[in-house]
Amino acid sequence: MKILVLNCGSSSIKYQVFALPEGTVIAKGLVQKLGEPGASIRQSSGRGDVTVTEVMPDHTAGLKKALELLTTGDGAPLASVRDLGAIGHRVVHGGERFTETVLVDDEVLAEIERHNELAPLHNPPNLVGIRIAREVLPGVPNVAVFDTAFHQTMPKTAYLYAIPQSLYREAQIRRYGFHGTSHRYVAARTAELLGKPASETNLITCHLGNGTSICAIEGGRSVDTSMGLTPLEGLVMGTRAGDFDPAIIFHLERVRKMDTKALDDLFNKKSGLLGVSGKSNDVRELLALREKGDADAALAIELFTYRLKKYIGAYLAVLDGRCDAVVFTAGIGENSPVIREESVRGLERLGVALDRDKNASVIGREANVSASGSATQILVVPTNEEKLIAMDTYALTRA
Ligand code: ADP
Image (cartoon, rainbow, N blue to C red):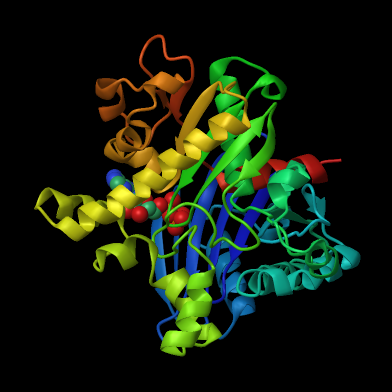
């Protein structure tokens, strides 16, 4: 079965076509700047790369163009759109209602819409993706895979904030966690690599991309994660602050007369690695600057690895010290040996010991980089959220 995986952003569509059950990628593409001058689509497949720049006023136009590129010309990845057996959508926020992947019907659409308030930037474009897929490809089943679903197994002690419970009951204010598809994929793959059933595997998974989050996994289930009501909480990120004293907000309102929009921007878009270094949100660039003696870049990286190490220590405690592996994934986790090394430095006495040479040689591939005798293994496992979305979609629709 051929499955189209869609990830719709406010002005973009990321897509991949998979062949299931093999799990191979037939084509992938990115539509950018929808509704803006200079809208473009780039697609790669077995016949090479194609880039087209043309007016695409909205997501419908973008999806139609993607389908056209997928089905026309010599060696087109698909003979016809009728080859598509199902469509899998990434949806950021499923609240408490969605604890797993679901087939989309009118009721599900309405429920997702009800969660828009919890993720005002992300859910609306995800919904647009589902709506236009139903319109452009009538009769093809749609499946929604939620970033929050994996974390719905967290206990109350991990997901409640210590604020009046009425805010939870009446306004759904609690920790939800994100990157669930990535943590779930990496956890399942790590269990395979360790040769243990997922249900008997305890892990700490570190998703380190532009957004970063860490997850404590007990018996294959998420029991704590660092992101909260929104993706702002937790680790230091490219442009997000992660944990900070919320009273800084009241202080800035009083002293600097900042409004909600300015504060939102400050902590989500101008903080993190970018804010501390004043130079870049990109770890590669910061590492290069640090090499040249840039103290601000060095400090930003130090804050990043210190926060991560602190959370790894906390999650070892959450797991009562019974942790099979600490796992690194996403852009930074997969590709930066030095960030991995600095994040676990000093944890040897807690049973987490890295083999420096092994670690240094691992970039962008699966590997065990722990020192021999380390009670807790350290692994690098590249994530693949799209593949998991395709697999879930296949599992739900092949019947
Ligand atoms: P996204 O969250 O946008 O999917 P990615 O998972 O692609 O992000 O991760 C992006 C981050 O990965 C950037 O900070 C980038 O600097 C970092 N990164 C990618 N390759 C390397 C590398 N070789 N060394 C260090 N960091 C890297």
